[in-house]
Image 1 (cartoon, rainbow, N blue to C red):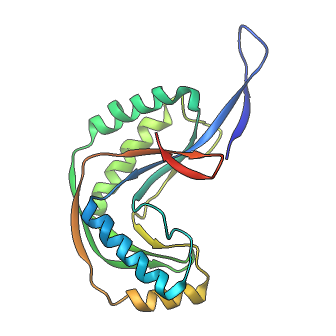
Image 2 (cartoon, helix red, strand yellow):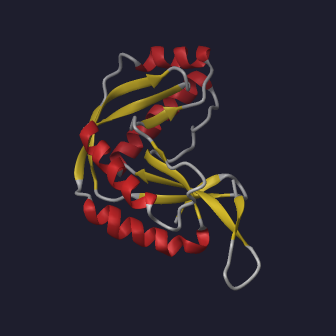
Length: 193
């Protein structure tokens, strides 16, 4: 979704600034991605088509509105002030979870302290970055998860959760990079910046 605001200029009439939606994520490795896609396939056997069925497995960290004309500045801010301060870490995945109110079934990553540290770093860097639209809220995802299915009604959520709640899942991967995505306003899908 594009948002147009007006910026005052000292040298000319007001210039409209176009803002785009951005999402910062951690992508798991190929083995975890394969496992998640297998779980999504099992979910589709139970539910049929559902929201997120074809999404690429990821852990969402932050979403915000930014100026695509200043995207180079944003990428540099992420590279130097976020990635430069973070250390690679093992992400441990353990079992499935459910957010009943949003109709989401997911895989649970740990350690929570790592994600808290990452979110603090992201917040401090983006809060002062001029490429970020300060008129819209910076959203930090404080419950990290890898989505299997989302946006289900209560009946479908219960049906899928009954299938996954007792299943065991354990795996790990190294988180050593963040991925920045921009929503493509033409088809409402996120693309890697």
